[in-house]
Amino acid sequence: MKRAHLFLALRYLGLLSILAISIGPFLWQFATSIKGPGEDVFVPDFIPDDPTFGNYAAVADVVPVWTFALNSLGVASVNVITNCLGAAMAGYALARLKFRGRRFAAVIFASSILVPFEAIMISLFLVMRGFGLTNTLTAVVLPGAIAALNVLLLRNAFLALPAEVEEAAVIDGANAWQRFIRLGLPSVKGTLVVVALFSFMFSWDDFLWPLIVLSDQEKYTLTIGLAYLQGTFVQNQRLVAAGTIIAVVPLILLFLLLQKHFFRGVGEGAIKG
Amino acid sequence: MTHRPYTPWLFLAPGLAVCLLFVLFPFLNMIVLAFTDASALGGGQFTGVDNFVRMVQDPKFWVAARNSGLYMVGVVPPLVLLPLLIAMLAQKIVPGIGIFRTAFFTPVIASTVVVGLIWTWLLDSRGLVNSMVEALGGSRIPFLTDSTLLLISSMVVTIWRGLGYYMVIYLAALANVPKDLHEAAMVDGAGPVRRFWSVTVPSLRPTMVLVAALSAVNGFRVFSEIYLLSGGSGGPGGASTTLVMLIQSVGRGLTGEVGYASALSVVLFVILLGLLLVTLKLNRREDQL
Image (cartoon, rainbow over all chains, first blue to last red):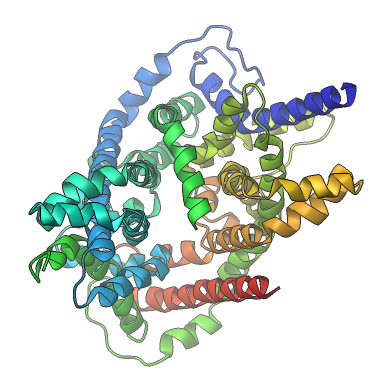
């Protein structure tokens, strides 16, 4: 029994040290963001003498940080909707409908997964210029609007739906769209949550593509806006810190909200895969 | 007939349109452009393999390719091993485990840019890490201004952010390791270290290969970490530039050399595909064992 207690104590010791390594940098950034102008930010002190949220207001005076945040939120929200809907439709057709050319369609999606974004980004910029879309948020959304990986994830999820349920619906006269909406979508809710969360995170996180395709400051998303803020106001770390905290809080809230689904969804995928 | 012949294509249309227009067409176009002298303004004459000849003679290419390769070699072993150890710590359901798991995952949720900026501040010449170094009696370390240290610092950031991500993959895999294997080993008198090497590691080998593949591919395509830690410059004299950074700086903007950037992209694609094929082969060998 005593040995078990010792092991448990060691386990908590290990967990706590990794906790410190994972969270410490965020706490330091937060501490920096609430330090007033009179306090030396270089002194390694996690608890400010005179905490203030003034830097959060001040960062908006030097760059339009709330516009950046709105741009990011818009891009990420559209990305979630197009990915959930578009990938579910395509996944449903691949899994549940029989038609000529199904293999061909599956090959298109599978080969798209193999193309790394970094290899096509310059060529993709030319495509956007061809459409006259450079320096627009539409161009930021489009390349990731329906990710091939999500199509295949949802195809696998739809395959798990028992055939008898759908046969019954066919006898009742439901057409493909009705079956997709009433039977298909509710049965893949878990996968949809994972797709939604990953789409949001991917889009909110995206740095390289907006950096290439956007040029006007008022179109910036948060990621390139923050890099610009750091490049221009590197002397005032309090402002950069406040900007990064603004960028990270929505994601942490979203994750805490969907956390249960996330760890479950990831577990399911792993067992099936 | 349960549906009209064209109905499936209506379901597929949006997804196919995105993949064809924004993935496969640019991909084919990149291969064509790689053999031209196209500029950002358009046009471009067929120039054969000129771009590739130029690449071989371009010292910047070799620096960038070496850095990407070193980056991959540097991040893979820690990313295969450390998240596994963390997953084993976080595997057992003890009070508060949910809080720990979520906390370990926080660096993954925070975007790469946020993480990059946080570490730029931590590793600043007068930042928190150097304060601690000085408090311990050392002298300040130029984490961000020395080209080698900049590469190593960026690797640390990648590894730090990867801990939580790969932990989740390992947690899912650990849940599938049969319990009776551990019990049988315990009956045979194997201690925890012995059980780790002769039960856990062999049953997790496919997952470890997967993590190695993912972290190798992601390591080779590194961009954001080095870009942010160097303030966009790629280190002193560009000595820490990676292949993706080189493609971005060559191909971007009004003076972009699209043809040469496309040739560099072809090389990047071939290397990444090669990494993937090697992994698949390794995986198949595992299956036969």
